[in-house]
Length: 252
Length: 194
View 1 (cartoon, rainbow over the protein chains, first blue to last red):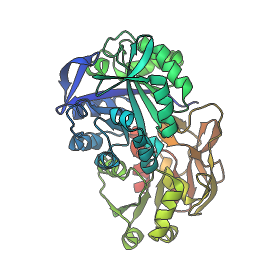
View 2: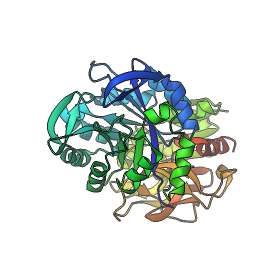
View 3: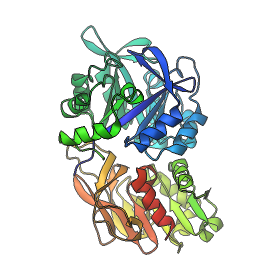
View 4: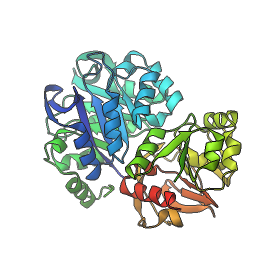
């Protein structure tokens, strides 16, 4: 049997609470991250992602004690991101119990960071997170939690980052995030077919069919979602069963 | 029980430590040869690159220590590969405890490294007791051990390969039991109860 497609609940953290927004705005609290994280692990999540969404903006470091509390409770892989800009930031988070880290804005500003991290910790540890938006007919990279546009084309940046040593891509469409209208299928497929590392699709999950589409048409290796899991709109075991019934290999 | 996790410059040691704590065991993380030698169980974790890790082990004389161990040893991921003879990752001579080469996955259009949950089968021996055939476990690796007489679990990613190996008291798993849900916890428990 082939490698399974992964379902990854995401905990967006602000001030120690799990939050959720729409198109990166109108953010509100949805619960305790330690409780949510262990519940998802028990219910069959394949991995957990923790993003400190205000870290870069407020020039704060991710709360490593919260990382430790979550890591203590979960028996699945755990990726942490938010405000990471140096080798020592990553050391701290791995020490705290993270398995992988994700870099975003700091890597765009200083691409050598990816190279340094890959050398020090291995590519398997380095997830490149990209927030992107369709502007004037092109997918463009945005920085600082979607606040600052760049002139960098998403596909070019992703390929560059993989050449530098990124081991996985976490691709978030800001246009789709929180809309529940489905993932950015074309974008995901384009990125997935252009690199030889796994691509995690993010933004737009609303129905179980959306996951089928992003795996079959979007060629994603994993799909990330937050709101639908936090609000109990889709339960992980039911989603896994649905995907299995559609012929998609999943861990059940 | 006295459990030791070998401390060196590779690995997600903290994840292994937390997994043991969830199972109700405490472990000491150390590079002290005396403590490693007298432990009841030794865990040799690892995430990283083979030649850098081997250099570190040799510099700290841990290569001799590991070879001399008579108690149950569990190598995980890179730890498993380092227990073998030779790795194609930067053409590295490894510890040579399990007489197997470590090969690079072929480029057959699939993504490398393999990252994610894959199933294991052909499960043999004490560490797989009560683990169902075709259980899913979490892998992250770009190199693999071929199937051989040392294979105690198999997996398939482009090629069929060893998901686990055993040579006497040396057990070795390519996947991460500390990150493989309840299946991984069963395997760790089995090892600790040897």
